[in-house]
Image (cartoon, one colour):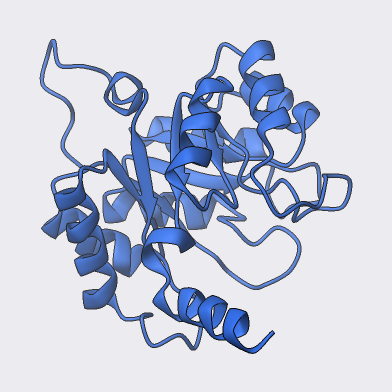
Length: 228
């Protein structure tokens, strides 16, 4: 991970008002191949993305080597509870792979190591932290523990947060009004119009994944539409 040149804009400044593309694929998906995911990231860069969000240290390292964009790295380990970068070990592996930002679950659920410990370790290693939260209270807590960015990633996926088909713009607005930390809108953003509304609601930047980088899910959507 190359540090910014003296006098260059901060990462937060570089991301302000811009699009981050999540270049991921679920287990078993034909797109879940390191070279394919790197090519997704290259396509996102060509389309004007400001950064990419990438899962797994191997894919992070390959993306950092090939794509001239900041990489937000995460490590999904498991499929229930806190599984997005659950421990300091996972976080430091992502920093070692070159992630400029480590994304981690910062919900109130029990976790193997505390979020504060993870933030401290990542900062000591020279990277920043994006807190994936589901509620306003979790966002406040994450910012208080030193998160550099707070994302609405987990709204609707954790008990106690609203289940809805659309982005949680109320949470975006609440976090933006309550925090001095940049808020990243993520989750169920399916159209450019929704992305623009997220910025208007106070988001610092916007993450889009499935609507751009998930051909299997998009194909299924069309198939379901033709057969319903």
